[in-house]
Length: 352
Image (cartoon, rainbow, N blue to C red; front, top):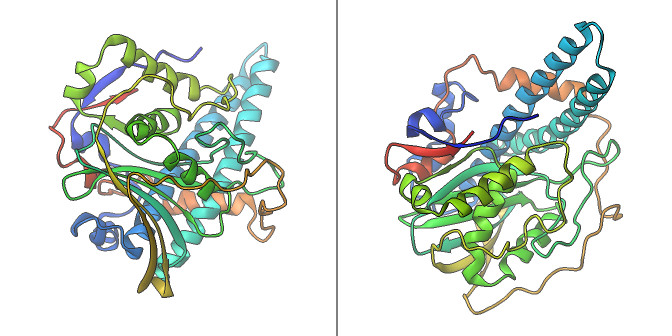
């Protein structure tokens, strides 16, 4: 049985370091999001998507190797626990499919970035008036939208799942939620549209719910966390605990408003961004707080619009290539969450 999660306090530098890249290249590559104002231009969107995917792939590769070690340990036991071995083997296969899906997106984003092609990313950026009490950087494979409608089946050997990057950052002294996806990922824009179709006073809670539902790299401001009632803390911890176990299927309503408000950052406005012409020109749809987007037609699992997994990219080559690139033996700088962490006191609370 998995150990019960609890909130622990860490320093900003201790929590937010991820050894994905060597320090020299990290400094040069991410200078536009680390050192410049976060304005969500085409180059910044590409950098954020790239680094978020790298973070997620790093974790998936590490998780995969951990499960392989557990399988090997089970096979050495006498008598052998057949049920446990079968379960771990199935988990390893699922992890490998996750590496395939995220690795494919990472590889595409890397090629775009180094070719200076910045017009392949679309985004929803939701701006708030206050600074965030919760920050997160991560990507996930959404199965349902914010209305509990099905989007896609995941871990299908024949179909490549679509990935969304989900960032809660601080942008020019206010909270900003950024969802990012490749323009041709036709199942992800409906996810973003379903978010913005909810009541604006629920946006803060929905953002926090999503972070605890899907993303490990989530931290909280200590004064906010410690000021919440125990029942609220338990709701969030139990959500993360439940979502992180392979024994329970993810519920269709996992992203819908749970009925309890966790915080209020005060919604300001939002933007649907889609840059054109290599990122030099752009089209952006800016909506006032009173305007609700119309939802796209429901995308159901098995839709003909799902993209097939490209046979030219074997799973094994992805695992080898990405594990080589995302080496844990090279000192790296802080990942994208560092951009948003500067306003927090040194003593970030994380769940672990």
